[in-house]
Image 1 (cartoon, rainbow, N blue to C red):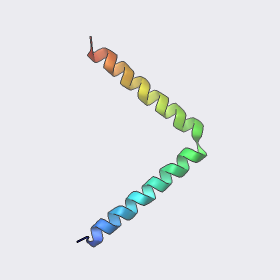
Image 2: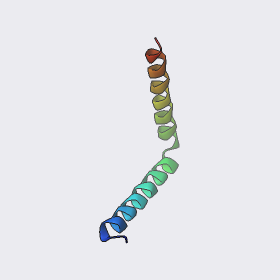
Image 3: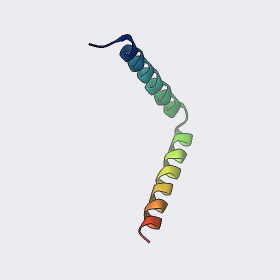
Length: 51
């Protein structure tokens, strides 16, 4: 049985998802740049860990 905290948590998750969805729509360049930096860092970490 779900309690009040579970419902609140689901509402908070939904609000967060909606906020970030709107942010990505309104700032596509910033979002793309951030994704590029993230994957660049991951690639560098992988290369450095294989040495």
